Length: 417
Image (cartoon, rainbow, N blue to C red; front, side, top):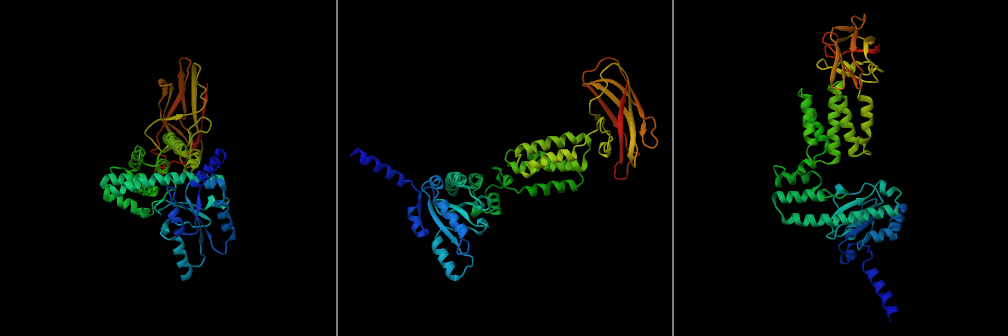
């Protein structure tokens, strides 16, 4: 008897939690449980490929297992919507409604509805071009789990008011790959503004499209204070509510501002923000552009490359000469600035040597690297061996530059002992 009962119980339990299939809403609704509905949409009549693909996915054991007790429905989409086909479609769809904004733009597609008949997610496009059943199964399993959580939050939101309701609606919008058609997308922000005028929850900020931040920063920049635009973007970065993509946008705003208005000393800031932008999401478009920004925009004033116009944009602070400096041994060193090309001369007012942060020697006089070079050699006396030699040069371009402050000058720096 036990041999008969155990297999019977096993078969009964496996059928109890198995995916069930229905041809339309009228059949599906009495069968629906917590895992909701999964519709496999394909182009009706003319596209046999998408129909066969949907059939194979509906019959795949991994997908069936991942879908739990969801009800599967095939959903042929008519190519030409006649009155007759429209009526048949409405009868098939029943109370499963999908707003136009969240409809798939290509077929085949998989549409997921919660147990209440609310459309919550769509798998379409690249995922369905050559679908891997195991990957589709993982996606369906994760999305059904998230739909359940989102449904609970939305049910709580229906009973809440004011800021608490705004917080719950915001939490419901946090789920990746899930939609909220009744609040799509500006409608949600407008609803939050009414419920939470002061944005105590932060979700109005979090839901702002990244380009609105760009427009706001550019407006500040155009007022004449680009550093204020950077401070604004930095304040956004300090707010933990923002998403990864928003934060990458803030870093990109700062990088752009520095590139347009800054000088060589700001190269380290470009590098810092580029690395932070990349670290947030290395595979994203902005993440991949970080290396390009550093390569193209972070200039250097080095012993190997000399100076370029980018070095001479600021007259206020000394600029460090980078590279392997041959000034570690005691003795007298000559630092020579030689003009190579450009429309302007480079004017030098001082060359200072440090060992780490300790000042060792300085030659402060007005020199000119141009045509001709005049007083362009600076002498540094090193009294003892150095462990970390650093040379800083101060330029003064008040005379040699165009009306916009640009100095077109390039040259090389040599150090002899």
